[in-house]
Amino acid sequence: MGKHLIVGASGQLGIELMLGLQQRYGVDAVLLSDVRPSPHPEAAKSMFIAADATDLDAQRAILEGHDVEVVYNLVAMLSAKGEVNPMAAWSLNMDPLLHTLELAREGRVKRVFWPSSIAVFGADASKDGTPQNAALLPTTIYGVSKAAGELWCKYYHDKFGVDVRSIRYPGLIGFRSMPGGGTTDYAVDAFHCAQAGQPLTCYLDENERLPMMSMHDAVRGTMELMEAPSECIRIRTSYNLSGCDFTPCELTRALQQRVPGFDTVYAPDHRQEIAASWPNSLDDSDARRDWGWSPRHDFQGLVAHVLDGLTQQSRVDKPVVNM
Ligand code: SER
Image 1: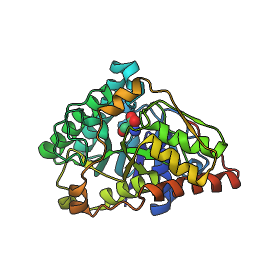
Image 2: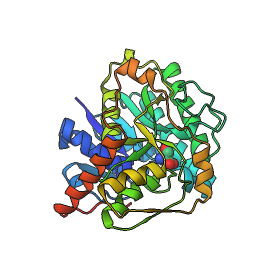
Image 3: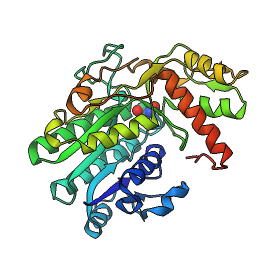
């Protein structure tokens, strides 16, 4: 059995996926790579390779030097940050993906995971239970690059037989790492504010509903997708995946039940427009049918899980990693 290589291992999802893969396959089966060192203490247990994901030769050298079975290429500039420098976002979101697909075509790795996003949908898609095959007319460069990347994945699969698999993640909420530059980040911030006894200043409208998922479910779903037999994977663009959905107002009320005194102040900015163009919730019946996806955390379950995780973490004096 070859190793599991995470490219972009020092980011929000990279850290959580590292912990999931280490637990599932053992620390020696996990290889980490990023341009910056991992800030998480558990990263020291697996091999870390400093490398630029936009450099094809550097990525090839990693695969030549190690027996890698699966690459999880998580490198991305998220929606809000991408709007500040669209050309940089396009390059960062596309070049590493194309390098990984090329290296897979050369036979240097057996399976590839690449994350897509709810950002592939635009305001024209039906809002509630957005179907798998809704038209993709994204409004952000992040969404444009994810929609294009999905088509590259399908092209490499159909043309060259590359076993590439993907998930359209909703907003991901965990307690072990912080996001940066996204539109759904407010929800993670809300938990940290509640935990710290501070109010949240929310940049979205109080009634802006977005699809969300606990990191626990996202990491489990990713590992289940990658373990499924290839013939089950009928969608080679990217799977809709649903966890739960809520508004900032609903999250505030749920947090108040556990942390009395917590409150949110609303100051919507440009990110509200991005959020308004995204679905309220997704139809994930294809993922359920093809590889048995089922979320464990509903809204209340997610709130309890993340708050408990933060509390436990602060007791054992393990600081949350700030990105
Ligand atoms: N969490 C991402 C963002 O907010 C969406 O996939 O940009």
